[in-house]
Image 1 (cartoon, rainbow, N blue to C red):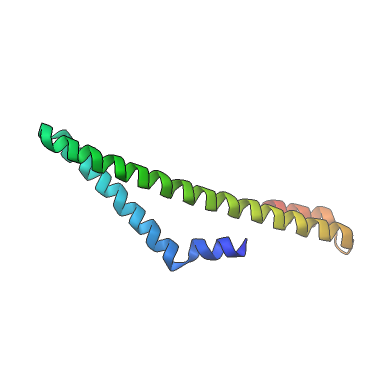
Image 2 (cartoon, rainbow, N blue to C red):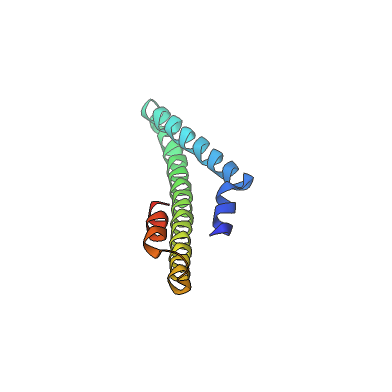
Length: 103
């Protein structure tokens, strides 16, 4: 969980997110140009648009997978923490479970 959290907060990941934002803006600009372009230009714009769409789809898939993995690891960590509390029998588990559920 911490490794995923560190990666999501890293400068490298933030730079990748900024690059993704610029790619989206470039895609929107290309689509606008495509609409007002000549027939010969449309082919070039279409190829560039397809390439950008593919890159953005892969970037989105990677971001979603990383976020899903992070959420799964967090859930596993909380479940393990809950089990430790139940086994330890030192605290009122109902109160702790409510706190963990809220968290």
